[in-house]
Image: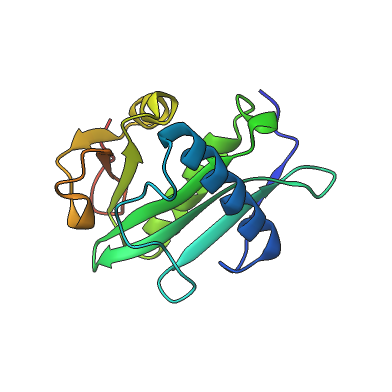
Length: 162
């Protein structure tokens, strides 16, 4: 595993982040055979609390992820994506750990996320990283394409789920 990249906090509308999310959308549209398969409300500059971009030594953005607050103690992971050229390098884990650390800093003890039925790679990744399958939440309730996960984080008053 290489660590030839850095994780940078950036604004949601950062051009590199916009480009990564556009590539993610193209990939998901092709995988599901429909345009914009996400059943939930798309994240926006108004509701994303934290956004990170993984950058390689040449300044190329190779991954990203965001947090959107759900309530006083929880947030949703949004737009986790790693460019195919960087998959398997540890970038996804680093982005996820950066998001978890940011959540803890904000006092959020629970992270939730939605991924899709046709994304077995993402499902394996989250399960390996300690996320457990939960019933659909929020706008994902009733979606046949959604698979939801949750992880309780280490906070000063509790240990993490594992």
